[in-house]
Image 1 (cartoon, rainbow, N blue to C red):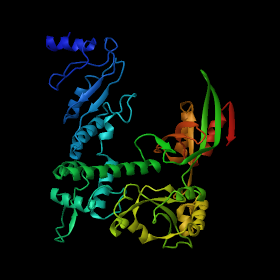
Image 2: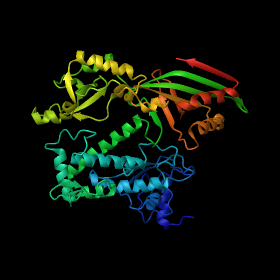
Image 3: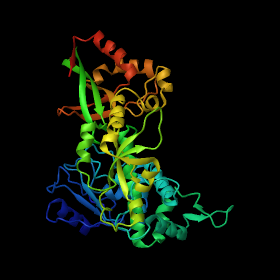
Image 4: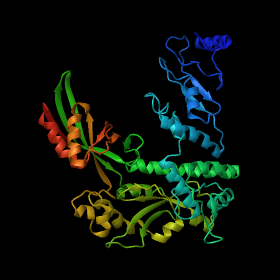
Length: 473
C-alpha cells in the first residue's frame, strides 16, 4: 500500500509503468518513494538521477540517492551532480563525498560502480589532497619548487598575484615575531578552510588557483602510482610508459574436488629508463635553442649527471623576454628513470646544470643507463650503499625493477601463501593487488610477492603439486 498522498502515488505509478519519463522529487516529498528500475516494473530503463543541489548531510544524501538505487533493480542508476564552475563551490561536493565514503554508501558498495561515476573523485580532503594543498601553498610562498607549471596563458606573475589575494582572505598573514614578513597561516593546509576562504578571491584568480591545486594533486597521485605507493586501488604497472616484460613463469597444477587448479608465479621486469638510441629519437624532434642535453656542475664519485630538457608546450609562444626565458618550464628525462614528474624552470636548470652537445653527454648518459640495471643510485654516486652492505635489496634509482606476481588459482593455495609470508615478513605484511599488460599483450592480474618469499613459496607450492613447469622468455 502506498504511504504517500493518492495523487503522488498515481504519478509515481505512471513513471514506473513508463507512461512518464521524468520524475521530480524534493527532499521533503522523497521519503518512502521507490523509483528504481525494479524487475517487477514495466519501466526497467536505467535511471539517470540528476541532483540539483547536494545536501549538507550525507545521511540525507543517502536517502535521496536511495530513491533510485535499491534492491531488486535491473540496472544501477547513473548520478549527475550539478556544481557551478566556481572553485570554492567544490567544498560542498567535497564535504558530502567525504562523509559518504566514510559511510561506505554508493561510492564503492556497488560492484558495478566505476571510478569515473562515483563520488570519490570529488573527495579531495584525503592525504593526497592535503599533500597537494601543502605543496601548492609552499610553492606560492617560494618555499618549494613547483611540481607543475603555473597557467601559461596568465598575464602577469601568477604566484605573486595569488599570494596577494591569499593575504586578503587570511591564508597568508604577517609574522608576529617579524613585522612586515609574510608567512603561511597555521591552518594553511586545512582543506575546508582553504575552500571557504578562496571564495573571497576574484573569480578568475580563484578558479585558476583551484586548477593549479588539482593539477598538483594529479601529479602527486601519478607519482604515487608510478612508485607503487598509491594505496587506494589496484597497482597498474606499465601505465607511465614503462616497458613491461615477463621473463619467467612458474606453473603449478594441483588436483582438487572439482578438477585441476592452475597457480602461476610470474617474474616480470618493468623498464623505465631511456637508452641512448631512445633519447636521441626524442632529441631529434627538439627545436628550441635552450632545449637539449645538460650536464651537472657537481661531480660525484668522478661522475656527472646527464639529462635531456624539453620545453613545455604552451609557453613557447610567449614574448621572448629574459624573464620569460628564465620562467619557461622544462620537462626532464633521465637515463635511469625516464620522464620525470617534476618540471623545472630554465633558471633552476642553469643553477645545477650546463648545456652541452649530444657528443659530450653520450658517455655520461650511457654509463648511468648501463649501471642502473643492477646498481642503485646510492652505490653509483657514493661508491657504496648501506642497505646493500647489510645484505638488503635497494631499488632506488634502478631503471629495471622486478615484480613477482602470483596469479591464477590463488585461493586454493592461500593457506600456504600466508604461511610463507608470515614466516618471512611477519603477520602484518600488506598484500598488494597488481594489474599489468606485457609488451607482448599478455594480461596478468594477481598479488605481489616480496622477493624474499619467492623461493620458499616455490618450494611450498611444488611440494604437493601434480605438475610443476618453468618457462623462460
